[in-house]
Length: 425
Ligand SMILES: *Cc1c(COP(=O)(O)O)cnc(C)c1O
Image (cartoon, rainbow, N blue to C red; front, side, top):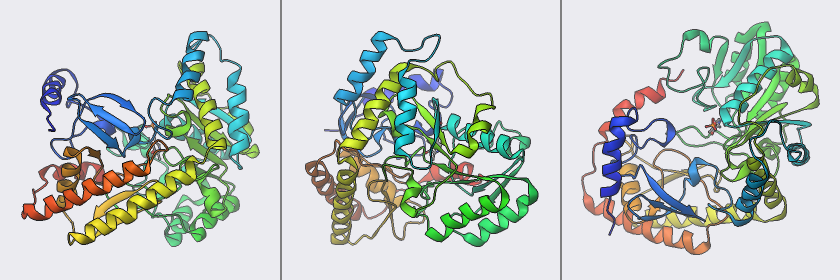
């Protein structure tokens, strides 16, 4: 029986000592009311909340969990290095090995710099491009997420207009709007930012069209600007290379994070030869950027990426989930909008403008032990099994029935504050 009294008590206490009760992407305030805020443990594909309820976890820590929580060899590499030395007066030699391995895997990359969060890597990418071009304007897709620094955070509270000076926006996959944005940048274009796929919240995901990706490359070349692909979320989930290897376009810079050490804190900026000097002459650093244990975890993660069939596995598990959910939805008279690559699914309902079907269905799934998200892309991890997928489909079938039989759906009052997230630009 699903219960949440421990979570409720923690949330009450958090209200007093943590602003807003919780902040950032892991705050559950925009999720169905009963979604647990606090968790106790995680293993493989599963997550246990503070009340001890177990979930098959399709959020994977919002991206870092690629091979399963608590992966044996990755965590052993981490712990061994932790015992030898982690945050020291200088980096461990394995930093060089990690840079060698990542540049060997990612075809556009000749060098690597390591940092902690995805935001560090996207911010450094912007700085390298401005240093390379000695120009200021960056062109970005409207609604794309590149992190939570003042220049890119989706909620403007606490930022100054000058933090977002020199930015021009285009519509993802819309070549004419990209050309128009570049025209507006005039002779001041430093970079075009692109997400590897359109993985914005609340809207369908889209693969990049070859035409759009190629045009972005051409426009950068024509203007002497750098093309930046922000692979922080999708990196190594869609390819064993830059995600734009799928469309045959090489960026000059790419930002990485989330899955590159299977949950251990490390991110990276990779770049092409021509940007090497520009990268060597910005000042970017952090107290924990050189810590050795996450690098050891990343090296083992890279080995698993190279040597296992994790990619094909997560793709086929994702396909199995997608077709099973479509069938279950049809049986109960619903139609789903399942978009994006199967291994990074986003699942919403047709004909659900207020997201209330989605909220009701996700809530029912959660209370039956499947952690889905109503408006953010999810992830398949390599620790999931066919049995987990089939179990999920069964639970989903029951949740569809529950939502259908419930008749009236809840009005989602909290979505009023979505304005906060969607007035972004
Ligand atoms: C998560 C994310 C970031 C920011 O990474 P953090 O580690 O949260 O700073 C940047 N870009 C994309 C595409 C992301 O998904």
